[in-house]
Length: 114
Image (cartoon, rainbow, N blue to C red):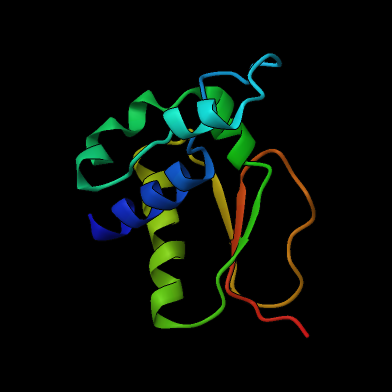
């Protein structure tokens, strides 16, 4: 449950301040402040209300969290969430080159590149 909370927190940080769809007329910085999403322990059971648009936006991203123990929590949490709900597709890369750009799933890695 802790790992799912970590993933949801990361996910909600990505979409914080977002509406269900972007608005071309919404350019003021004060509006962004008013639309902030606070992700604490109370949001775990609300993940099913995340608009599909924002799930699709996250699937375009590459997340790299180098390391071992703390980093594994994020990666395992993503896998667990995918098992619970297949809308949250993820592909983990443990080493080597990152996966090429895709819109099919979130790409998450712990690989350290020089």
